[in-house]
Length: 288
Image 1: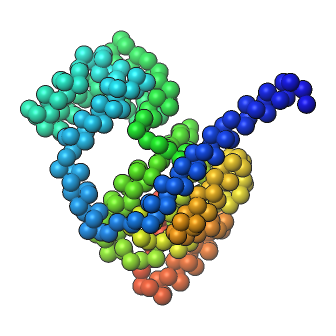
Image 2: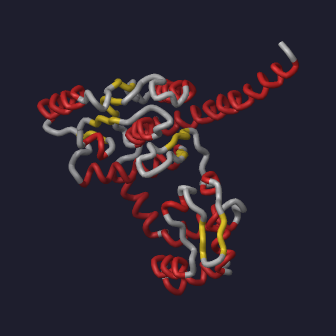
Image 3: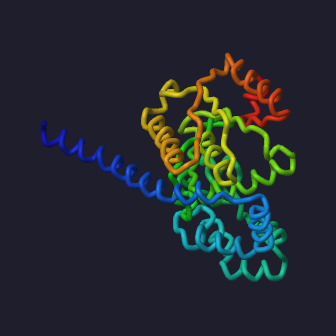
């Protein structure tokens, strides 16, 4: 092996070792996560407290993710508008959160959908800049699930999730199910493997409130999408770790978009047996 080949091998190994360490750390956190599910009452308490503390939480997020984060595109907008953190604090005390957000919007401190996706420059008057997609990353996250969108509204964009993010979404999902009286309904999902993050995300969300996804349908179960084998490996690695810690995420079952009969049969069987069933997927799949 030449010196150049040895250098390339070492260079390729570094991200692999980094990813391995990340997943070891994640496994330790996952153990506590799946073994300490929250009840519906506890979810209500957390969300009620968060609602009462909206202004305080907004300021904390603003400080850590904008004013103390040099890469934040929002920080540029605040600088252009000459609005300081102290200004926002004062506005919140005088006007409340909604009126403060309206005032910030009027001063050009906002980001459109296309700007957030880094598909067009952020332009305010004669000033403009083009942030990278990664500049919008939340510096407070410790992500282990890194995927990408399906690209239905344009070029695919990255998405990152950590257990804190998933736990927060799980509490909201729990109460939504309770409101629609389907908290006890069998849960089926129809999402892809990574880089589509939603399949694993829903498997982990359900774990947070002690519920198990009965079946996970996926348009591919290997590397049929040519996204890369590492995504396939990461998907099954998370499934394995969850099972080791006591929560069974089902293995993905391949169902193509053109032949979705297995999904229909599963829905029919659960309706006959339980009288209700919940399928979580995209609108486009539901319309097939």
